[in-house]
Every structure is written in C-alpha cells, then in structure tokens.
Image 1 (cartoon, rainbow, N blue to C red):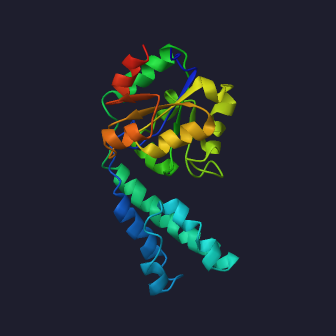
Image 2: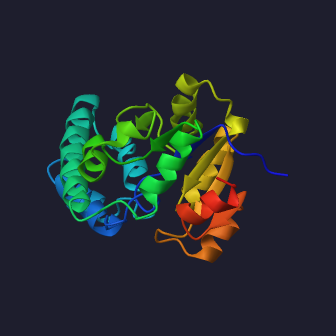
Length: 219
C-alpha cells in the first residue's frame, strides 16, 4: 500500500506550467553565445547528446579557468534571456492552483524543483510563495537534478525524510532524480515525454496530469 506523502516536490515546466521551452533552440542559443570562446570545429561537435547544463561542464576541460568562468557567464545570460522569453508564452495548467490549494489545506508542504532560472518561474507564477514552501532553481543549488542534492536541499528545511516525499515530473530525469534521492516518484504526461518513455522510467505513479495524480493519492 502506497502512503500519502508528507511533502511533494514538483518539477515546473511541463508539470505545473505549459511547456513552451524549445530545448533544441535553447541549445543553439547556448552555442551561439560560445562563438567567442570555442573554435568553429569545437562548436560543431559540442556534445549534442548532452543536456545544455551538463554540456557546459566541459568548458572547464577546454578553456583556462578565467575564460571558462567568463564563457559560463555569457552563456548563462543567453539562457536566462531565452527562458524568460519562453515563460512569457506559458501559463499554469488549470489543475495547478486547485492541486496546490488542496495540499495547503491538507498541510502537506510542497516545493518546486527546476533546472530553469528563477526569473522564468516567477514570470509564470509570481505568487508561488503563497503555495510552495520552497523554490529551488539551478542557481540555488550546487548540483541540479538528477543529482539528489537538488531534491534533498528542498526537503531539509521541511524536516521531511526522502522516503516520505514524492517527486512529480514530466520527464524521466525527474524519476531518476527521485530514485537518486530515495524519494517516491510520479510521472505525468503533460510534457513532451510519451507514456512509453515515462513508464520505462518505472515511477511509483503514472498519471495523465497532476490533477489526476491528486485523485490517485486520495487528496
């Protein structure tokens, strides 16, 4: 029998808000920002299979420390600009506020765990603090999900053990992050990942959306 979690951690884009980020275009924006730092040949082979943030870690291997720091700052600004523009086209799903309100009424704290920047979340959800105890973006932690620190950093102030928490997301990476942290996991199908891909990640729950998940949890 699965127990009602004592805290719920939510991914943001594709989970609580409409996904408007084009990750291919975001990668192109990052690569364009690197043109002053890497050669055309290096850019042409710039780890197309890696997520953008992980790919940026390779700058440390290809550039002196001072240049790597400078390059990261330039790319980070390009990514924030891209994310905020995409956020202007997004909105919360219709089920998001009712679900978060229900959790507040049940005294079940929740947090938003995202690899995006804070400005993009606050563009879509400026009053997130009224509903969520924590918002941890990539700028708030040293190691972002799927590293467990991203989730554990949200749970520690809440005083909730990982085994008593549920991580909810629309991408297999969210399920991996939950397992890495020792949390329960729930996949929702409101992002780009299809049901087969999400099911293959073996979440503890799989729902069409957060609203349906709440019913599955008996909340």
